[in-house]
Image (cartoon, rainbow, N blue to C red; front, top):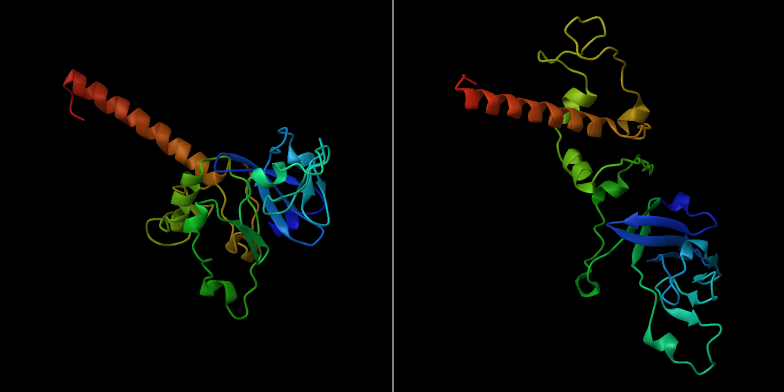
Length: 222
């Protein structure tokens, strides 16, 4: 998020790549490979300049697009600046979020500016939730609208709200969802609820499969 870039380079890991993100003195955001192209020092310890970032080890100076601006310690006529660069990704900053394109440069599409980004009388509030799970699990869960009714809506098979006094209720306490929670800004502890539920379902499924195989081997009906 834009609010997380305040003064120091921030080390991040995206899709298995170690990167560093920062905002330079001209308020431009750079997303570079974390290790310097010169001697592999981590740019998370680099010094943010008016333009770009400078490595803490030998002072090599990189622009936000990875272009080498200075190579202290090299001869004045050294051509190394023209032969290499620091790997970097193009970014787009919008509504408090920072988007990066990490695909082939020749195939970079236009930014998908959705109409929902500019709804009248609505304010987009960026937030971040750490979930120690695979990104595919998170994406699959977000694309599954039916779980919301039971996991977040607290309804039973008759369609009515589950109360804490119901003896058959699997939920020991019920409370109305606040407007903050409805906006998705409520804090979620780690590991997240969906991850815990997925693990429980996986264990129950595995146990059921073992029972079925055992009954099939003994000739007993499933």
